[in-house]
Length: 361
Image 1 (tube, one colour):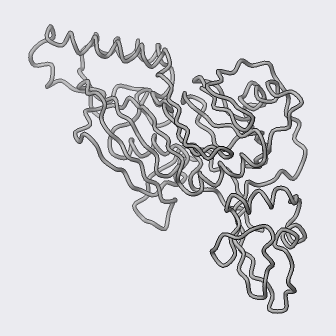
Image 2 (image 1 turned 180 degrees about the vertical axis):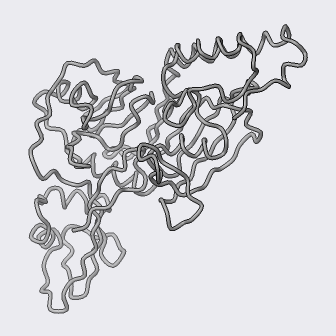
Image 3 (image 1 turned 135 degrees about the vertical axis):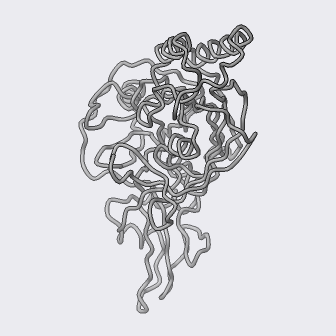
């Protein structure tokens, strides 16, 4: 079985099982669920049947039922959240959760900035996963395996310093159903971002392969050569212009690691205070000390990249109704916008030649 990175999970590149099986010319007729249980490692009948019901398992590129009997030469394709291979000693921690919505099958959480989603090499505790384990106590969340860490309930993730909505699956059926939606590009995700510079076009689309930066492995980069990186598309629209910064909204068509951050940097509009991509210094504006002090104050108010996952839309795995959630900007983001609006409103008091005095990019 080959594990591939699911293209649409933002920005964690969660690992999913993706396999194509071609049945032997002498294959006997047997139910597909029984065949797959015997063929695949550590896969339960319930997990296979859920996947068939949702449409994650196809035969000859067609949706089938659990009682379908395979035939010689049949081509079976499947995409499933990877099952855990080993026990991982995750610890439950009493960390408050801002639960935006919850039912028997899923939960939508408003993640604050600074909260790491899952334990990693440098973050063994204090994460959203630790909080989920405490919140659910004896309830067993489905596990998604990725990069050697088990991730209870997580269908996707957002960066530590990005605020906003994140989706949690509470059972295997919901996990598989929601994972399929991510794979099919049908999850609607909109972000709000404050970027450096005056974005000229009111709306646009950024297309460019994203892959690991060749020199700085902590960064991602856009590659013109399609043989490098993976296909990525971001749509953006201007919300408000403030001369030296612009407030925009972004809609993800794909979900690569750091996609919005690296795509916007690529077109010359790095996220405000995005330290990893050099947005934590003055990239646009005047050379006056008063302006520098103003920007430094904004950095202190919002010591992170100005990116917020504002809305999340998906099909409910059980009711099959479309659900759309939207959350307001957090306090730090709102305060920085208020300061920028106040600064721009006072520009009439500035010297008339100020627009000619700018910082080099």
